[in-house]
Length: 276
Image (cartoon, rainbow, N blue to C red):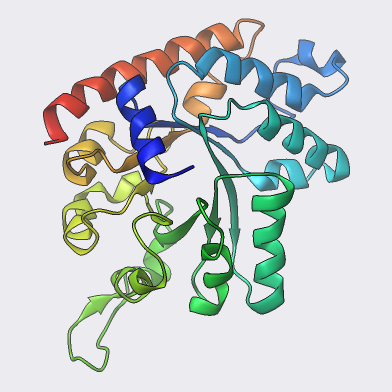
């Protein structure tokens, strides 16, 4: 999916919602366990219930890989079921180099047909560039995450040869920009780090940001929108548990629909207020 197509979906739906399909078989409603493929059946109903309000879906690979080949079949069926005009993200956080990175890119872009994949940049440009070689595909680079452990490395301050003191995540953003363009490179910035979004926007004013951590993890959609939005929006804000587990019962899809609609309505207000 191209940048203009993604912007078009945001404008059409007045939404920048990404629904995280972190489907845990131990948490899905018990009546679905009678299905031939409970994980896919849960995802199918969530997609049907939320597709009107979302512009992206983000399956977390760990939840599918943990189930072996059956889980990967559920993943493939899920990606195939998602409407083609909705952006798809493989939340895989891959970070190897060389031929291994190339095979990861081939897996997610060619085999599964995802539009984007999350990538860890710790091993440098060698671990990122194989993903950027694909036309109309996106690499989403981990920059500043929402977990407490982000303090261990990402916020460390060091002095590069220029003598400028920068946090490690800032160095990642600055050094990685020449690897791609605003048409194929996004960054992950956690919602619980919303106070840093203004400074991040000064470094990358035009890039898309994927923002996890809103909802169950405590991030503020208002603050993320206020400090992270650019004139074209430039945000994909992820919500997982708050939507897909809105109810543990047979009405789970109905409750997911209501929660996605509530978030979309809030996003519509922020688009009018902050996307200027």
